[in-house]
Image (cartoon, rainbow, N blue to C red; front, side, top):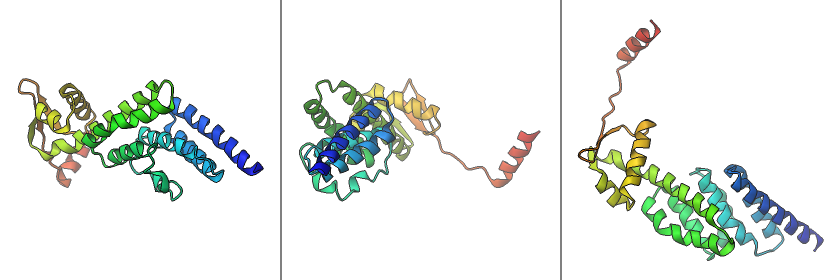
Length: 212
């Protein structure tokens, strides 16, 4: 019993540390701490282990890690369909699979979990909204190159997002050279550019010219 109570104390402390790291936006560290607190609660036989899992899913998404393996942990898998856990686990799956429309449909259910758990969930809601934009940005990046040209209104209708939101993210992707396209603002069109690889000969000539 003494070991159980120590495990439980350590679990509570570790979970609080995880929440502090989340607030400090040290998302990788928060992920490690929430996973550890889950394991400590589990070792003590406490159902509070379930409370760690929504925070674990959130910190994974905030860290922009799409290859995370925490929810593959055999200790966690029996609880993924629990009503406290399922909304965040489903959101994490949509995030990992880069499915924005699915993510957007599930977002309110996920926010409700934090509303139930925390008196002022606004910080957690804002983190989820940031993750939403990250998923939308990645979906736009994958969606646009499947067309030669596409209307911004078509893009926003297909992805079920605001047109201005889509436009801002398209510009951001172009500026960061992640999307090879131009935007015709008069026609409201995204026009994809074809990227032609330079021949090795031209690359050599270019490097010679650059060195002059």
